[in-house]
Length: 164
Image (cartoon, rainbow, N blue to C red; front, side, top):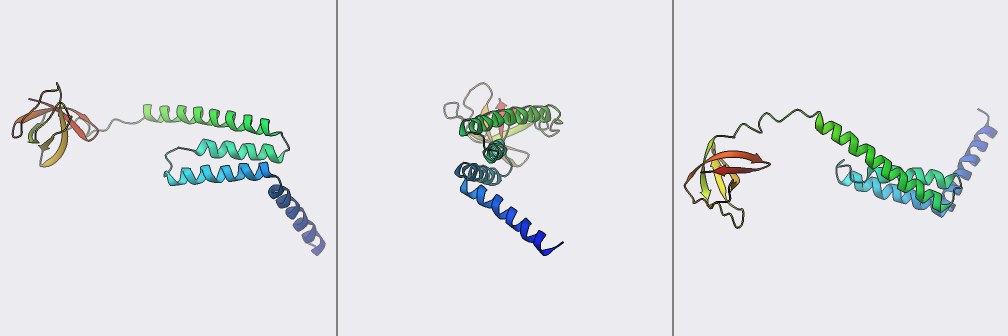
């Protein structure tokens, strides 16, 4: 490559960067993209703001193309909405295809001992099941005293639903 060709490429690149930085709308969308991308990274891929980051990138390209701010805003809103809808459909499909947790029903029907009285008013109480301390509540809302033996009826996350 000739030295003059390298100089022309540098000049062209400098013009692109200068136009990018001098256009406040492009710069604003670039900053919005970075903010949304950092927010997504901080939430450890919880899909909190990825669609906003991508839509900001689309709006930035619209600003680079010279479209008015109204069109940039429309592209951002429509892009965010479509990406959110697509993500939601994908998550629903993934949840539907998810295999059931084999341990979910493992404890149902087992006996546990109440180690902290179950109170229907506060919803607090603890039981010991197979040597493990669990948060628990009564299935029918009855108070159950410490020391009583109960049967596990359901598992809701990290809480056992029990009955006498």
